[in-house]
Image (tube, rainbow, N blue to C red; front, side, top):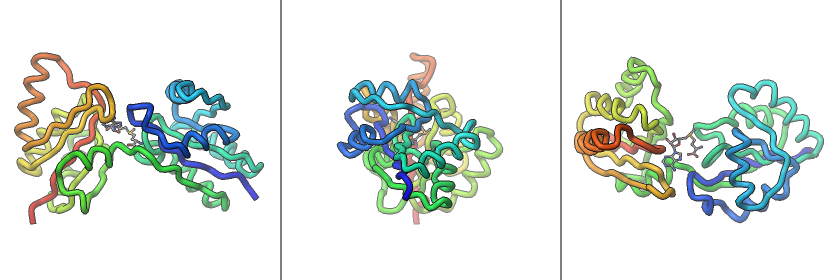
Amino acid sequence: MSGTLYLVATPIGNLKDITLRALEILKEVSYIVCEDTQQTKILLDHYQIKKPLISYNEYNKFTKTPKLIQLLKEEKDLAFVSDAGTPVISDPGYYLVREAIKEGIKVSPIPGPVAMIAGLIVSGLPSDRFVFEGFLPKREGRKRKKLLNLINEERTIIFYESPYRIMKTLNTLLEILGDREIALCRELTKKFEEVLRGKISEIIEILKKRLEKEKRIKGEIVLIVKGKEE
Ligand code: SAM
């Protein structure tokens, strides 16, 4: 017998967006493994949960994973969380999950918020079939190549994008995919939540005006793009 590795979804903004089961598991496990201890402490303090934290990220995953597997083999239950939303989705955890499965350890999901689904459901774009592309490559050449591969995609396409790159990305999208309908979902579940819906060119105009006033686009962004018309 070994312990269980729980993959626990946490809020993407509003701290109330956490399930009763997630709170129960966070209170019960021996350790909480997290991306950034400071970020996770904010959530745990809010719910008055005190637990030893173990930091885990892309940089220390190869050294930390064997130690976590050892704890699980010693029948300790672990909760794995990322900074926001569902771990393993554009977030650390994949390597640990693979190693745990190899060792025959039980991996159990505690589902909850995930930014792409929150964005998709408010986008007003077809949600029956969609693809999640995560973050586009930062380098322009690779970004273009990726988008060229998506030209014929008929399903709704979901991207994560940084506010620093959004303008450039929208211009590249317009050039490669044409003036498609999109929804730019910003700061979902937070105080300044906003969903801009329209053609890519219209959203670019809105953001241009905003940039003139505010100098930069702020907040976290999910970008939903309509697939190619059949
Ligand atoms: N694991 C997370 C999830 O379940 O969605 C995603 C983590 S990824 C490192 C962070 C990206 O998710 C952000 O750059 C942004 O694109 C998106 N995101 C996270 N929270 C968001 C929010 N409240 N509103 C809009 N986008 C968000």
